[in-house]
Image (cartoon, rainbow over all chains, first blue to last red; front, top):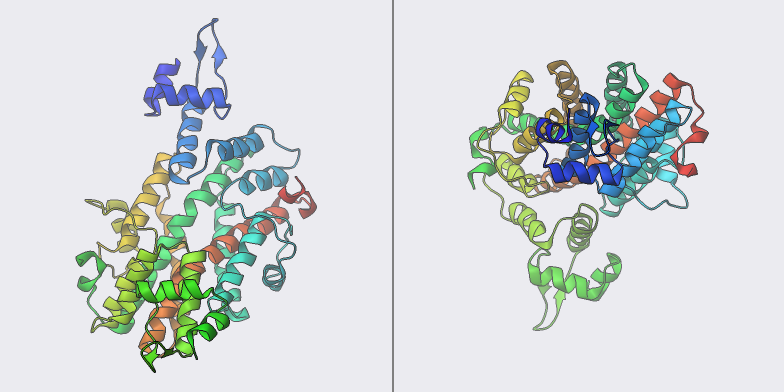
Length: 209
Length: 209
C-alpha cells in the first residue's frame, strides 16, 4: 500500500506517519521509485504500537526510539533484547547506590534478578516511600504480593507468541498497557469487598458528586 | 510539642508545615495562647502522609485537600467516605458516557460496583488502549487478572486496622503506594521467568549499558 493508505488504515494523520519515518521509529517501506515506497501490514501494526506507546503510555518519541532500537537491533539473546526494550519504558528512576529493601524482597521470593534493572530501583523507591509514610510493608504482605504478581507473570508468559519479534512487542506492550488495567482491577476489587464488608449500597459512591 | 518540634520530628521545613496548616490539610493544633499551639503525634503522622501523597504519589495540594476533606468530614457510611477519599487519588479520568468493556469485565467477575466510580472509567480507557494497540485482552486473561487482584485486595482488607479513621488512611495510602510496588514486582517476576525460560544469565541486562 502507499503511505496515504497506511495513514488511512492506521487512522493516523499522514504528517504523523511521515514524522515517525523521519524519526526512525517506523521502518522504511520498500522503495518502488525515487519518490514512492510500498508499505505492508507490519507498518500498520507498528504505527498503532507507536501511537499506543506515545498517546497512552506517555512515552516521548525519544523513549519510543529506545524501545524500537532494542526490537529492531536485537541482541543475540532474547533475554537481553527483552531487558533492554522493557528498561526503556517509564518509570526510569535514576540508579541508586544500593537497593537493600528491594534485594531482600526479591531474594525472599527466590527470584533471579539483575540488580541494575530499573524495576529493582523502582521497587526500592516505592518501599522507601511506604516506610517514610509510616506504612512499611512487612514480609508477609510482600510475599502475598510477590506470589500473585508472579502468577500473573507466569500466565502472561504462557500466552506469549512464539516468534521472537512478536514476543518483544507482546512484552513491551503487555508491560505498559497491563499496569493500568491491573491497578484499576485492584481498586474495583476493593470497592466490591468494602461494599460486602461494610454493607453499604453502591449507589452512594463518588460519582454522585 | 511546638510547631518547630513538629517540623523537626517530621523532617519537614517549618515553612512547609505552616503552608499545610494554612491550606487546611494539616489540622490545627490546640491553642495554648494567642500565638502558640500544641501539636501531637497525630500531627507528625499527618505531615508524613501529606508529604507521601504530594512528593511520592504526585498529588497536588488541591487533590490532597480532597482526600483529607473526605477523611476529616466523614459521611455516615464508611463505605461512602472511603469511596470519596480514593476517588480523589489520580488518575482522575473525565467521565465517559458509557463503559461497556469495563462493565462486561466487572460483571463477569461478579463484583459489586458503582458505574460512576473513577476506576470503572480507568479500566474502560485501559482496555480500549489495548484494543487500539492491536492487543485486546480476552476474557480468560481478564479473569486471571481479576482473580489475582481480588486475592490481593482481600488480603489487604483482612489486614485493615479496626478504627474508622485508620481504615481510611490505610486505604488511601495503601492504594496509592501499593500500585508502584505491585507494578515493580510484576516486572521483576517477568525477568525471573524469562531468565528461566530463555536460559540467559542475568548478568547481561540493561544495567550494563
